[in-house]
Image 1 (cartoon, protein in one colour):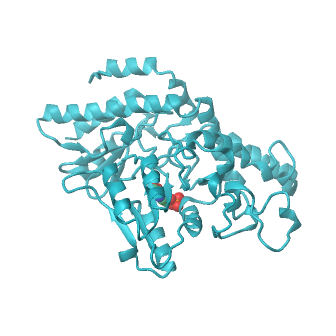
Image 2: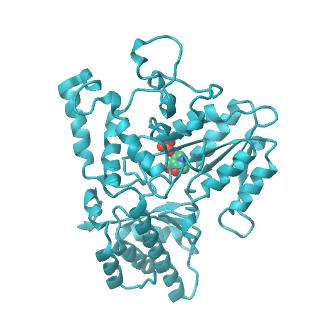
Image 3: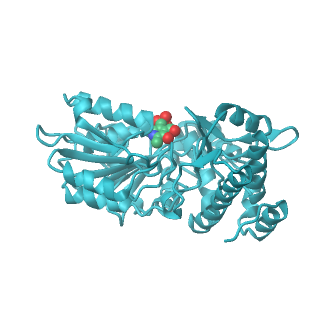
Length: 424
Ligand SMILES: Cc1ncc(COP(=O)(O)O)c(C=O)c1O
């Protein structure tokens, strides 16, 4: 696409946008009497207008049915999570039984590590990307410690080559090969939170399997953002949160994926709870844990129905949009337009004031661009906020801006770039 740096061009792209009606499904924060330019879906996605109705409906069931709500009403709560699995399996490229929703992200990462990090004295190391989200680093370090190993030696963090900003897939693969004898697990994010790099999940998984180890992924920044084929890529396990690109509210419920090849593997340990018990026998309250088949067997606690209700509100919108296909196509143009406009600012200034560290390869990124400010980054970020452009700031010098195809317009992107230029 040949982009143009004019408001008319942005308007014309919006006019042609098949998905533009979806913006009206969301509540957009206001700035000085008009819609803010919200480019922060990588952190907290906007609230679907329908969320209130979906929660209210469960509050009504609670009011009218009380405990009977678990078994009766339009959406008996015992079965409620099943409604979320179809849309999530579409977004994740998974079989329905490979998915479930439960807990929060870091909690789920721990639960999955209990099963899939099985260190021995010889093979105990975990390979992960350097600069992973801190919660993942803490989770890994504490798991390694828990098993009696020293994270300094047991955690291998992989950084980009000298002078490069993101990791090369070939380097990830060769690190897996080189460390194969000592590795117990490869754990990566799908999209790195800081750089916005979308990793080659399939290639990483294949290399991990060649090395005879499991491959797991934290998809916090990937789910609802980039196309995923978790089943076909043979990923062993994954988890994600729903509050970013899946618009399911602050601290919203998390999802997990466990590949079906592990369903009958009795060697996988797990931290069990009654909600993971096979559903047909759960209420017999018998001693001895007998897991439900599939990802559900990793569930621990009673379903948080109000969180699931918001999640359903958001996932119904994804279903209405036909899944990720058209959304991804629009996303590539939206983010591409932002990239073009930022480069135009640099060109007009005759200086690279803003360096985009997110890969320019469309297959290696999602919505987000991470922009390193050459100088006065924090002041530039504050200027954007004062002018109603909501992104986020990551120390020491990065502004993250993420146009989201469900609710952002090309005009949002155009105006954000004008304010970025104005900030100079
Ligand atoms: C990659 C990644 N992992 C983990 C987390 C933490 O998730 P939670 O606080 O929901 O456990 C986040 C939050 O933004 C994240 O981006």
